[in-house]
Amino acid sequence: MGEYISVEAAATATGISARTIRFWIVRGKLPATAEQGRKLVRQDDVRQIAAASGRVRGNSNGCPSPESLSANGSAAGSSEDVAREPELFARIRDEWIQPLVVQIAYQAECIGRLEERAAQAEGRADEAAQILAAEQERRKRAEGELDRIRRQAQETALTRLRERASASR
Image (tube, rainbow, N blue to C red):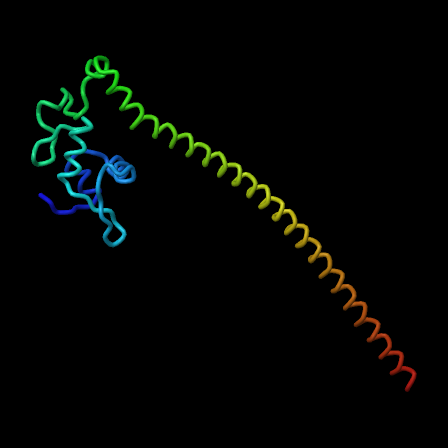
């Protein structure tokens, strides 16, 4: 089976996460080719590297072999296996848990920055709303003053017209 398949298809077929497969590609452990912006790998290469690293013991169809499954049906070993094999535990910690801890810490930092920016934006929005309300009030007063001046001007003009009309009589 020398055909190239996508990283996602290889992950599904072998039981290895797509993230691990991409990690192997970046590290140069797994040869890959790029086609239309996607990385393609050979399924056989993924299986060989997985077997060599002890990640998954699978059969020819890409499914874990029955003897590698625990009682709950997962491909991981039992807690006794981990206790007996500190190297396996260290590898799981280093390859799976530690990157997740780093990613969680990064995401928490990003969330903190976003919350801070959201609070700042809310503060600016409150300030803008106060400025807008003050400007609307000022405009309302100015319109009232303008109406008063217009009425006064009309009354003055009307008074002058009346005075001219009475003077011309």
